[in-house]
Length: 305
Image 1 (tube, rainbow, N blue to C red):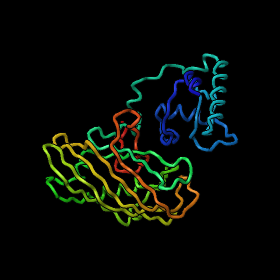
Image 2: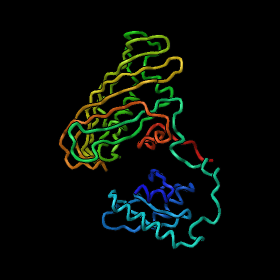
Image 3: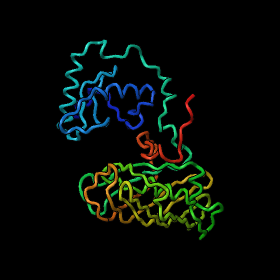
Image 4: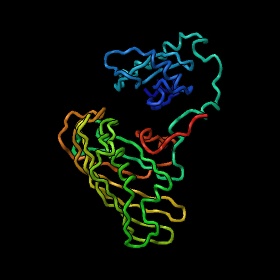
């Protein structure tokens, strides 16, 4: 597969924005052009998700939504074979794309909080049910929101209740059963029965503030899906007061999850232990991925002129 991949320019992207008809950005128009050419075959899911071999013109060469490596290898071979027979006028766009046009695309990556707090969010079952047994997402907080996680004037043994709206956001959009697949059953506000997080200052040394976290949440939804999660929260972090940013951060949520969500690929709704850990994300482009919930939270894009 790696040898075949060397014949392609490999790219990955989320299709949630691009598949929507109201999105008229050039990348979305191109995506929908080739996605609509795909025909469903046995083993393929519906929708726009999948793997595509595509000419720069948007001409579809081959496609599959299967995760089976053998099927994907065959798809890549089919794509290369069709590319070899494709005339030049079908391979390329009528004119080169304008590189400046991308500056106006309404991509969620533009919301990345450079001076805020960016966390990797990994959900995992205590008892492995089946593969995959963990999943990755991200959580974004603005600079002022990150600062609100500790007291205004930190001193040893000082306690601080994190603003409820921030804890609610964790409970609604990040403390979810995403172990097997992203779960788009986000909890409405009325489903949050508990949302408490307290930070306690352990030490203040020079510009560094060391603290621990303790709290709990409970979210319970009955309709349209019966689903919930009730974890205890424990964590620790170090905040650089001079630079106004966290230099270390770990927050662990462990508790019972239950129910079958929308798209979470669960087969057994019975309560079972699940853990979710939040840690500092890296600075690479791969870790600038927007949270799955970014369209539904406090973060909004500026109006396009």
